[in-house]
Image (tube, rainbow, N blue to C red; front, side):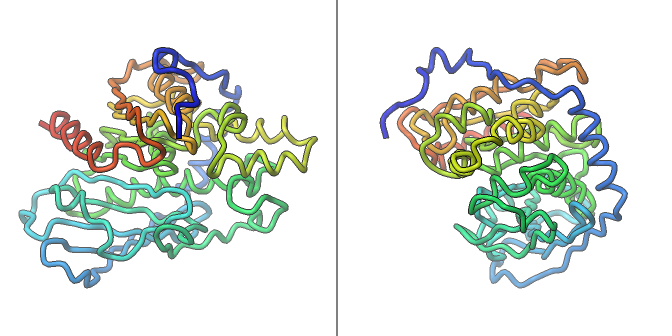
Length: 339
């Protein structure tokens, strides 16, 4: 895939035309207050993962509407009794689920507690999932896939539910006695990276304990540009839907504006390490830089923090990004942060 987006010199200064709705904060305050009215009911059941160095727990907690959300919690088996561990809350890419109990334990191998959140209604792609999306809007007219599910209203849009689940996953991680609730790291690739950005923004001023965000080639950023230029992956679902529903562009963009990572990134306050891939034709680098450049800058509803942030750019990679090389970079970033 050749370079198709802006040159790096322009990416570093690119800012999205996305502007937050006037009631963005009120919308998310009400959404999260409603969600947190349901008891979290986080449970952790030990399971046999067939590994000798990792202990794994089957996690269930209450997400949007009180619906159960699944996950895994991995802990180093040699952890010191009574010592609480920093935790990495890990979100999954589009179509994937939490996978098998022993499928991804790398953060626990590095000495962290590692909570993997299942993504409601997904788990049909790269890794299997176990969490349904029972919301009535799942049956609305929409393009095949998830990007236009419930797009007729901000209340019913699919990612409202997923963002709430991601927020409550942090609370679930904090509820385990082996976890240090004051040392929560958010991590994820693609859709998972988008959930990192959203959760970093939504927890700011609402939930203590998040200390870092690691959005890797994040999805769900700068919707207007992404819909216009992205040739492959989930964003074209929206374009294909609008190609038939020609009169719904403005209304759809109005809904998506409440979920655009560019808007939510502005609220974030914790240190962040982003990544972008210059040949990425699923999450184009300009959409990632739109989020990165907005991160921590504030809005009318939240003053700017000047959050510490950095971004790694992988010039010759498509959506796979830095992969194992970037994980090393993340480990270095956290080691420096945590001391």
